[in-house]
Image (tube, rainbow, N blue to C red; front, side, top):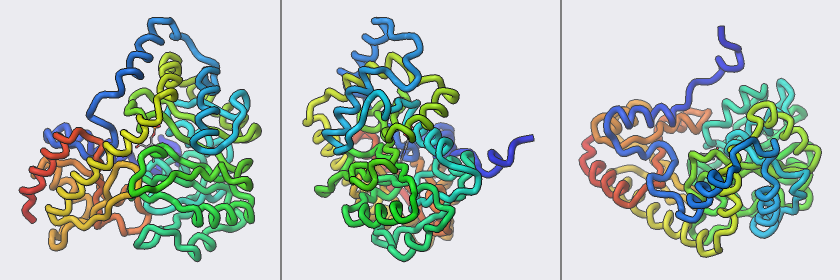
Length: 381
Ligand code: PLP
């Protein structure tokens, strides 16, 4: 009954683990959403926008005030110039921005380069849009393997997805890597579709680079981000895509017929979010830096081998030796017997490498992480 398109992928394992977590009363370190409140000013702005009657459809590609404010932010933070009237589309989360982008540029059979490990949505994004994903594994140190990247490009390559900082491994792509990607995209006339949802969550002095800010990439990049992670409002579903006029016209068409528009009052509240002072962003990164250490210590103490991420709010951990269990079995064991939910590594890999890994998020209150730490002390494998 179902289409081949939909038959190609299974339901989200991450959201599945959240359901199991609820069933077992476990601490949910599976899905990346905060269990602490969103900033007061932003919530107030959301409530005020409803009371001020911003309750009807906004312009399909987004409230003008928000596009204007985003254009300023993109120039200041991302170093990307944009015309808010023709080059910005507000979407229902960056999730919709990615899907709308893919649907607007992909023809059946086009190839899309995806670095591995990758955020699990990109597989279904490719399947729904008719793209064939070409996975390029990062090396053991999470650097680009140049030979692997070069050999992934060919005549059929239409786009490359660049998620930096990356979920699940916290990889932050460097200047040199951006240059290499740029050379490949220019040589093969390829569009970069980015996912920069963790653009403010960086550690170890790492700096965020938007590939769309590079001259040669300006007209061949769709820069995607959103409000979910930076402002702890994952349920608001506000994201956006910035791209030159012609690319934007495609994204807008898909967006219009898919959703009509993103939630109108919350778009107004997002204008307020973009006016937060610089200290908001440094405090955010510092807070997550502290949580990162808490979770790292708990995992290392329980026998997981893991590395500190450079960005985003996840830790990928190798399953302790000698369990005899793969990622799925071990994740189920952890959630049901230890009371901690994680995500099986296979969700982020096309190769088998994920079957020895689990992903944990630290986007939780300190007390939640400490409770998870104490449960993990009982890990007995
Ligand atoms: N992109 C990445 C890499 C993510 O990790 C997530 C959420 O976990 C999303 C996109 C979803 O973002 P949004 O809430 O804006 O749809």
